[in-house]
Structure formats: structure tokens, C-alpha cells
Image 1 (cartoon, rainbow, N blue to C red):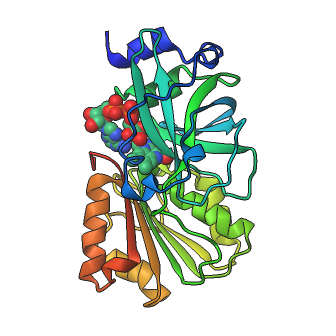
Image 2 (tube, rainbow, N blue to C red):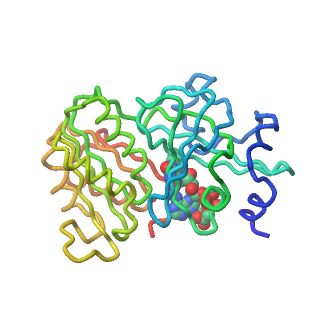
Image 3 (tube, rainbow, N blue to C red):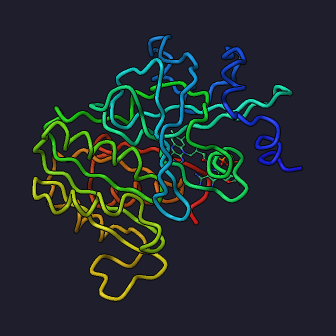
Length: 287
Ligand SMILES: Cc1cc2nc3c(=O)[nH]c(=O)nc-3n(C[C@H](O)[C@H](O)[C@H](O)COP(=O)(O)OP(=O)(O)OC[C@H]3O[C@@H](n4cnc5c(N)ncnc54)[C@H](O)[C@@H]3O)c2cc1C
């Protein structure tokens, strides 16, 4: 039996059960929670709580957004994440990090957008088992490095691959909610047009004409009439999209590990100082 199956069958953080269970304190910290920047975070932030799933919205065939009502909601900063923990009756636990998709201005709830990873332990559970009304253990907000505030006046450059768009969407939503007027440009790489997460909202943001612009590239085929890029992100594309933001730009890059590393290298190649680039890696593959 696969581990994912074991979780789905056994746990089922069919959370009425998990809520009855003590919220544990012995969990191994996630890789992100172990970052030095977080060791200084106030302790209450890292308490586990049992959230209720109030809405599940399909974004693409492989990505769903889960809106969670939190009994102990705390303000977050755009770019931060929550940890999700699943616990089986035999004590087996699986824990993963998921970026907050929603803007800090929305109180009482957060949304997490999760991409289904084939055979992925936690993402398979969330896609295949979790239902509206279920409860699930989470803790956060976590992260003090990959964060942005609308009060930061510098131009904002965002580069995403796949589900790496999630924390960057929180930044764009925050900018819109706070009526930020610094120029902002998102360069977003997806496999095909069917894999574009938040497609409608991104089009709306771009059309709003308030200084936020969205540029897209499709790496595995584009529909007829497509006017965006059709190749992997490279130095020329980064120069074309982010160059107009000028020398003061602050850049956030998020996505699969290989994409993040190649984009960061290319940014340095085109002369962006490394201290203006912040990166977040979601996973081990770039395919
Ligand atoms: C700070 C942070 C924020 C994150 N935010 C998000 C988010 O908003 N949305 C989201 O969907 N994911 C996000 N992730 C990734 C997430 O934490 C999990 O790694 C991912 O959901 C896979 O977990 P899993 O249990 O389903 O797969 P696992 O059981 O851990 O892995 C199954 C297989 O898939 C591979 N794999 C693991 N992760 C990935 C990945 N991301 N891409 C490709 N292959 C992978 C593994 O190497 C393994 O072979 C974030 C990660 C970090 C560190």
C-alpha cells in the first residue's frame, strides 16, 4: 500500500477525527520552518490549529484552491506560508508547506492553492480525499524572508513557474487591496494554457491599468492566436519584461527548483544585483 493510500485510508484527516485528537507538539519542523529567520518568530505563530475547509475551487486540472477558516487567524504578510499536517491513527505524520494565496487584508480565513503531484503524499490527499466541511491541521503564518508589503515603494518584479505563482499572487492581491501604485510585473511560466493558475484573475489585474502587468510564457505548446512567449524563461525574456522596472526593482522568484535556479542565474547575468533577488523553491523537479 502506498503511503498516500495509507494516509487517505487511515488518517483521513476526516478532520472531525483529527480535531478530537490532541494537536501535537512533537512534529518535526518542515524544511521551511527550520529556516533561521523563523527561529525568531513569535512562538504562538507555530501552534497547530484545526482549520475547516469552507470552499474547494478547481483552478486547473491539476490545481485546486482550498479556503480554510481558522479559529486562530493571525495577520500574515504576502509571501508567507502555512504548514499542513496529516496524522494517521497509527501516529504516522506527513507535513508539507503551502504558500498563502490570499491577501493579508482578508481576515479569518486563508486560501492555499495546491498542485497535484503524481504519487505525492499530501497533495494527493488534498485533491482526492479532502472535502468541504472537513477539518485539517495547519500552523502559520511562517516565513520572514520571502515577503513583500505594499508599503514598499520600489518597483516589483515577480517571476513564477507553475504553482510558484501562489505567493506572488498573494503579493499582487495585496497590492490591489492596498491600492499600491508601484509598477509591478509578473512573468509567469506554465506548460500549456490549461495549466495557467488564476488565469481569469490575472487577465483582470492586467487589464485594470493600475500599473500591474502580467506576461506569460507557455513551454509546451500555445493555442492559436497566443501573443505571449513560447519558450522557457531566459535572460533575454527577463531583460525584456523586467528591464523597464529600472535599477531599483525588487524581484521575487518562485517555482520548481530548477526554474528558480536558472532564473536567479540569468538575473545575475543581466546585471541584477543578487541582493535585489529573493527566491523560494517549491520542489525538486523542473519538468
Ligand atoms: C515554502 C514552500 C511553499 C510551498 N507552497 C506550495 C504551494 O503554494 N502550492 C503547491 O502546490 N506546493 C507548494 N509547495 C510544495 C509542497 O510543500 C509539496 O512539496 C508538494 O505539494 C509535494 O508534496 P506531496 O506530499 O504531494 O509530494 P511528495 O510525497 O513529497 O513527493 C512525491 C514526489 O514528487 C516530487 N516532488 C515533491 N514536491 C514537488 C514539487 N513541488 N514539484 C515537483 N515534484 C515534486 C518528490 O521528489 C517525489 O518524487 C511549497 C513548498 C515550500 C517549501
